[in-house]
Amino acid sequence: MDEKMKDAVQETFFKPKPPKPPTPPAPEIDCIITTKVYDACRQQECEFFEFAWELPDGWDEEDVTFSFARIVPNSVEYEVLNRELINGGPLARIQIEVCARVELFVVNAQGIEVQVIPSNGDEFENIVCFEKDVILYMPELDRMEAIAEAIFQVAGDPILEFPDTTEDGDALAFIPIGAFIILKSVAEVQLLVPTFGFCPTPPLCEEFPDVDPCEEFDLLPFPDFYPPQPDND
Image 1 (cartoon, helix red, strand yellow):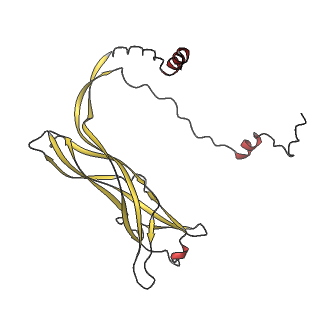
Image 2: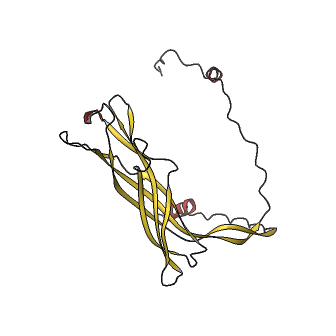
Image 3: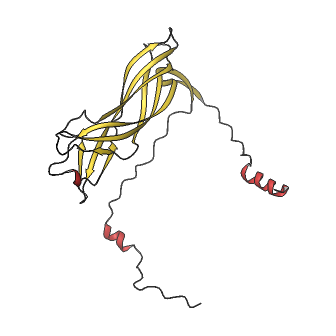
């Protein structure tokens, strides 16, 4: 690569950014009450969870064309199982169980889908949980909390197993569930922060328009009724 090409690449990809304008000094400093994060860590987990389920009434194994699972929206919950200081602190052992709910559907050749997990209103049979055992900075257990945030995902297609026709029993579903988990140690504190006053009044809301579909149709361009002719050029 010659020098001109190097200069062109340097100017194109490594051009220095202009300096940011200085932040104006805050007119005042306020004391606010807020939640401060003292420590945090993240983990990814994935495993197959086993569920028992029953075929819909009138269905047999051959009727199931495919199946799919999904996480119930807004179903993520957590429970702190144990907190204890390690050798008097400031580090602590934190044990948390993070859970979500899953639904399983089976579909036949006609496209009819039936939810089979949970079934019969059983609100506990569809829970999936990961137990975490981690170390976080938490010097004062009585004034601090451990919290968890998580995003659960179905990591693949369910694997279905059906009982032998000569035996009674439930069908089984093995569903791969993954979770992105963040664990934090937090406390409510008072902080001094620079402020620029209160937030301005927001703009007026934009209401969803009540549109007449015929008015929208009248605005469409008129289509060509005939195929285009070949270009004679």
